[in-house]
Structures are given as C-alpha cells and as structure tokens.
Image (cartoon, rainbow, N blue to C red; front, side):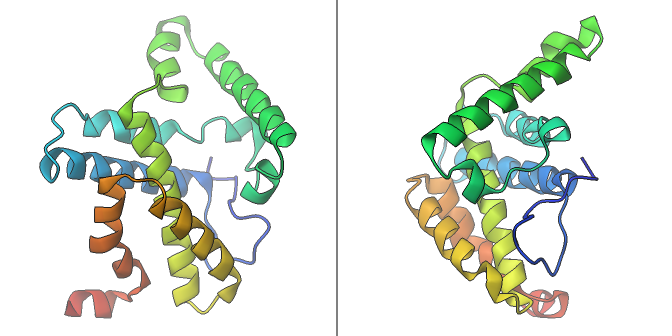
Length: 183
C-alpha cells in the first residue's frame, strides 16, 4: 500500500500513498463514530469497527492501483466496470489468505452493510477535503475545484457527525504547527 500514490492526475505538493490515506481515514472514521456516540448519543455505533473497516478500505488497490475519481465516475459504465474489477481484487486478496483468516479478514476487506461502513465513506471524503485543504494552504491552487466539489458532496451527506467534524476540526488542517499551538 505504501507504493501506491493517490491523486495521480494532480500536481501534489505533498505526496500521499494509500497506506497513509488508510491510516488517516481510520482516525477520521473512528472520530466520526465517537462523535456519533458521545455528541449525538448513538450507542449503537462501534468506533473500533469503523476504524478497522477504514484501515482496509483501500486494500483492493494493492491489485488495481488508485483509480482517479474523475475517471472512476466519468460515466455509469466505467463505474460499474471498475466496481467489478474492485470486487475481483478483493476476492483475490481474500483467496490468498490462510483458511483460518479468510472469514474474519473478509469482513474487513469487504465489510457488511452497516452504519460504520457508511462512516468510512464519509471519512474517506473528509480525508479528500483534508488533502485539498492542506494543498491549498501550501499554495497549490490546483486543488481548488476538488475542494469545492468534495465540500459540496459532504454538505449533501446529511450526516451530523460530518458537519460536526467540519465545524470543529477542518480549519486546523490549514494551520502550521506554530499556529495550531497558538489556538
């Protein structure tokens, strides 16, 4: 995972690989689940499960590589074809596992429908917003359109923990360590 870079169609000031991205997504998914539980009182949300699902959410890209979002969602046929390739890559990874680990890791690589899985999707999008924020704060205006697109998508998510995260944490990603410590 550390050898597969993200954001391949854009000039990056700070390179990001899918290993780093998965780790950051796990932290954000865990935080979203904690917000759901402790801010909004949803005791049915499992923060640890959200974090684990996020750690594995890009596992198939070990085989497929990172497909840029504009290509992946260019049209319905490409999206469907890529989803099929992604599923085959997940199957390949699961088939490579020792028998005793196939069932438990299968749920990590291909998690069942759940609120935690939904939070991982939101966390993935928040990490895209974080990446755009960091690139913009470093002077890379190439991320301006992506920032607006991701921010609009997140606003439409109607997820209270996403809104809470944006209101309370997103601005910090544009700050230097010195500025962050001043707050």
